[in-house]
Image (tube, rainbow, N blue to C red; front, side, top):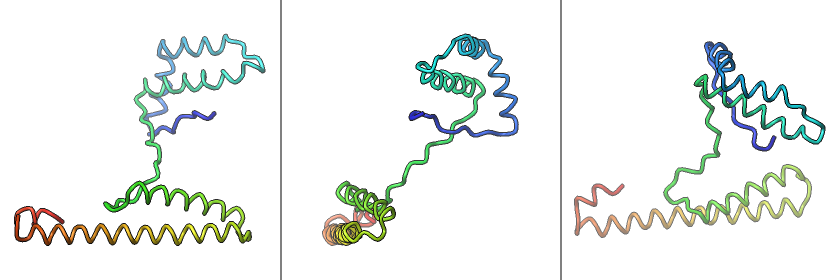
Length: 152
């Protein structure tokens, strides 16, 4: 069950399309193989991927589209780099630990220390990014006016 596929986007016509796809010869042969195979207790772990394969084949034949997996968005800031991303990931993991043990003083202190470090680093990165833009604008104003106006 670890590699369970994402959901599918169903419409009103998807039910009939999926049923028609299950009647396709490829799906019928997969279903017959699944039904004729005798799964033991030891072999039952193989039954789940086989059945999921049948569902996936039928869904692709029916042109039922998969939901896109919900990926966690990273902040859309130009100054947000990998160092800040690593620090944020550590902060999130410590926040999850704090939610499990909210009254533990060690966990609480560790979270708030990491929170201060993350905010300090975030503000530093933002400040240096803005300063680099201002420096480039100062340099470009006299040397290359066209590039000056193209720079944000």
